Length: 158
Image (spheres, rainbow, N blue to C red):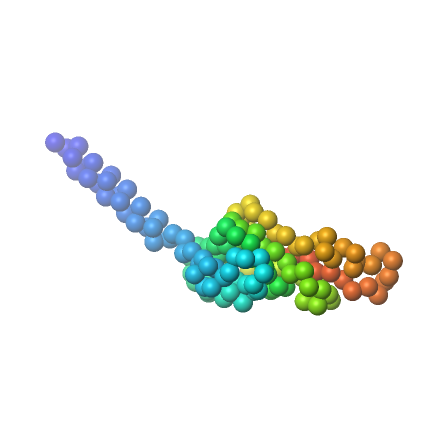
């Protein structure tokens, strides 16, 4: 009979641990719910920026979810500092625009700045559309060339 209170105590501790884990769970900010269009043609830059900013300004563990599909994204800077941890989960494909006007003399494509505890995950593709721009890269011959954008990250550590 003495083991029943012990079992109840262990059960209660387990239940409290589970509840605290749920309280610290991830908040998901799905770009589709903010209006992203996964057609590979529509500019999703503002939608991604909005989803990221909401995740960045939320405490706890937050995920910016990019579901399956192809999302065109013009050069963008996603900037902290953030109140909590942010995970950028790429399940779909991020695709750079092919028009040269939006990328020439822009030194980045996707930049993460001043973010502690940033996690990049999902294992999908960042398609910079390289072959469409390589012929325009004359930097090996011309020191005054117009540089092409890159993916970069600047992490601020405290």
